[in-house]
Length: 343
Image (cartoon, rainbow, N blue to C red; front, top):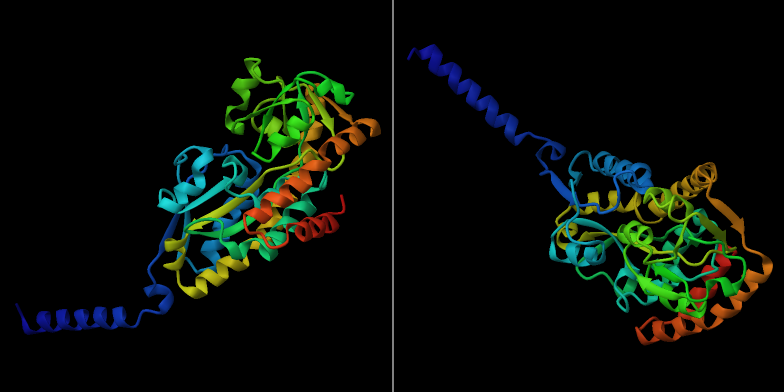
């Protein structure tokens, strides 16, 4: 080996060493990949309009140090998503609090009927109420809340027309959450709590007569030909509460500066995006349903009044149960939410 050849190797090695120690913090930082295993359909409006753009924004605001990886299929059933994230089966989950009866009682506030017909207002309004009245109790074990929100207010989607309160008697209606069970019972209907992912089979086989649903999910879950009638109730028949939660240990491992950057584009900002996406989807879905021949009617004032009267005990029962779960002032939270969304 010649002297010049050895010298050139020494120079190259030194250059590599200098380059390694002079890397910027951005270049030297380890990349964190957070996995998300969706159980909702790939075409679901929040995937396309909110969560995928948010994942891209996470990479951007952290300068590539944190990335979100969408897994090809779900980990666990829809009913156990918060357990999945707690146990580390997926770093991020989106779950519905009402799928686990009695576990998230204060959060049932966001599922109340007759709150609002406008999800663009309701979704961020519930997030703010959650932050003020519920977040301090840390209801999601080993989880950091990316955002939490009320979904689109639902209507009566059925296999037959609903004109009076008596038309509901004895109908088997799918309850989207535990909070919907007493609502259905108050209407003299029969509640059957099942995930939305099972709804087509239950409807097409005649096991159920209807469900509380918004317009877009009817199309999203391909139910338009089994649920031909939609009765629109002013204020809605209730809605689900959904939360995006990240495993606390994975969250804590992210640099504090990057956590702050992610929080800034999550929380209320994401709840507003959710509300806007849902609202736009509802407008389009209603037109598509009408074009499909589905019959959409506004409930008569008499039917709305009868429903409201039947549901009056629901609120006070929730106030009592929420107090028993340790919520400081559930009545104040309910009053504030109603005032903020304006019915």
